[in-house]
Image (cartoon, rainbow, N blue to C red; front, side, top):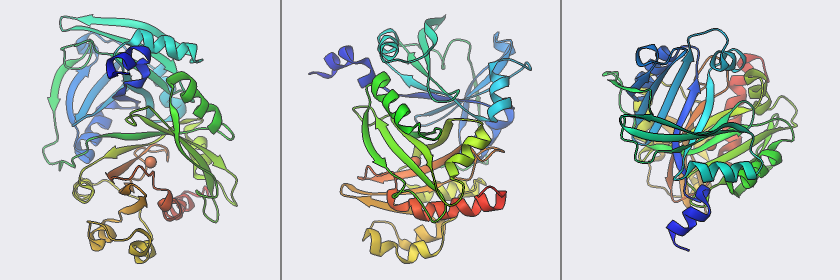
Length: 371
Ligand code: FE2
């Protein structure tokens, strides 16, 4: 089947990330943080000055990454209630589609809960169509059909370019995967959801024997589109001697939500150096991890000394290897964080690192008294 025919018969087979929208308590300050710490540029703005009465949104971009930071100007709309309940977090994982109507119809036929039927937004620059369905917790997916829309981002936004000149550019390029934490026993429910609603297939799964330490455990499965561009790992807590990190997330976020986004780079050492320079804090890795590393993964291009210095993790599968590191939480609650990832052939999600990583997360949990 040709790519064009495939796109018509299954519009959800030809998708990509469009943007991630965060609901936050103070979008102006959050925008400054993502600009100064993560090197984003502000591109566009929507708010009272542009005819939007009840909220403000800042569009930040870096290479193919687009974040929208939205805050409410009133005490009790959906944005304000979301922030009151969950704290700052991801609201919308927006997906770029060629045909929003067909994608929406397919999703609804698969059992998706409708939040907004396909709706056209227009201005002098053209037309953009958006439809929105619900996923886990209060998180949603919008289908975005851009139809050659020539404006800066979407109707309602005006160009508002700004950057923080002192921020080092870390070279973050695009989203590799976006992980959801769901409740006890709900991993299969949401894995099936992405199968039915998006036509995704399962890439890989991990049980609690793979992902556990002496104390905390979780289970995970990764759902993906046919082109492996949009990958959604789903985590659920599993029983351990002490509280699972997924359970801690669910307690603080008050339910299911996005746990982390993994962001790709072509040079993880340079990226981590730039982010550290900008003040980004990363999880530490026990020094002993590096003593056994070469034995576990063999020879790689990067110097062991650099990896040890920057606390970068490495994992290998039969396709190659990958390098990764995790930030500390990005807001007051220990909920959302970023992963920085560089792939050298490997499709892995870092299974071999789970143990080393969780020992480190537990150390942070211990400090918060939630282990
Ligand atoms: Fe990840």
